[in-house]
Every structure is written in C-alpha cells, then in structure tokens.
Image 1 (cartoon, chains in turn purple, green):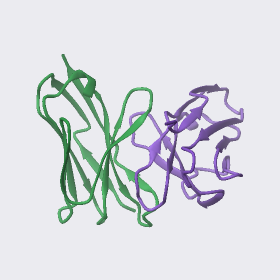
Image 2: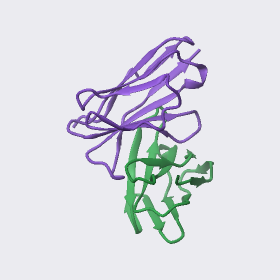
Image 3: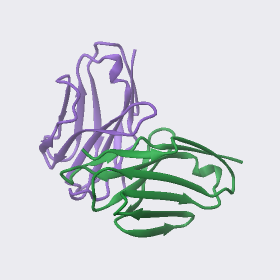
Image 4: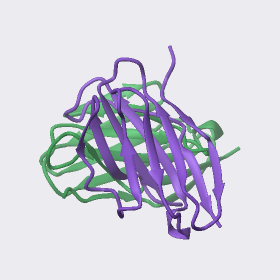
Length: 114
Length: 109
C-alpha cells in the first residue's frame, strides 16, 4: 500500500523566499508529525497534529514556521522569509494512533537556502 | 526531556563483521524504537521493543529497561547495511519521539 509521501523532494530557495512543503500521510492515520533534521544529526520534533488539531507546536523554531492540516489528512509546513539556518531535511511521519506507536516516515524534503 | 545518546557516532566495518550500536537514554520509557535511514532521507522502522530481545533476519535488538540501555546488533554485515541507525524513545508525554543523533555505518566489501 501507499506510504507517506512528501513533495517536493528537493527545494532550493533564495534567502528571504517563502516555501511550502507538503506531506501526504498514510490514509486513515490520525497522527501526523513534522521533524527537522540538520546534516549529521538526528531528527528534531517540530509539531504534531491529531486529525486537524495541532496539539503541539513547541518545536517550531520561530514564528516564521507555520504548519496546518485543515482537513485532517494532507499537511503543509510553511517557512516564511527563509534563512540559511533553515537548510535541513524536513521529515513527515504519520501514525494510526498517538502514544509512541510506530510512526511511518516519508522520504523527506531537502531544503537548501542560499 | 529524555536525552538520548548513541555510540559510536561513526562505524566502518568489513563485510561479514559483527556490529554493535549502543543507545542510552535518561528517563524511563515503555518502549524504544530502532530506525534505519538510508542516504536520501527515507527512514524505516526496524524494531519497537519494550523488554528483552527481538530478532529479524540478521538484526538483533536488545533492551535493558533498568539500565536505560539498548543495543542493535548486525550479524554477517553486508554493504547494503550501510545506513544511519537511529534510536528513538517517547518524549515525556508519550505522544512523540526524542531521537538519538544516529550512528553512521559503512560496511565495505
């Protein structure tokens, strides 16, 4: 069956541009997570949705980062006025439930800000 | 916040060698996950374990809940095992993960 998909796979942005990253979770999965993974490091939590509700956004590094999941399925992570330090792989994961159960990861979007 | 450490950070092995990757964490948990990340970013879940040992093919994962330590072993390593291996534990609220920094494994033919 289809797994988690993300688009685009690669994005190059000029500093100051806005970008939007898309995540299509596994159909029926209620939980959706966004992570940021800098080069050579493990993923770092950004934000978490249960259905359309954003239950935790404590990991978003600044108010330039915004995530939404308006219909409880597809999610978009938006970064405004991108900075070089935003360069990273942005991973999306979904889970059928919350509570530390298995998360299924997408392939990630590699963002490079020049 | 649960702090997760892994060792070694980088590991190079010859094909056929037995490999061990270690993970330790600071706060007691109900279960720990081992993940495999290939170049290009895709992450695959290998194991979720809460006690004892699990085996899947050439991969073995063990956990000692009292010592807050887990190990991932690869027997008869192969170049296709080359990847970053990450351990992850639930955060304080149990709804999300805290990830270790990863161990980069290269298996040479």
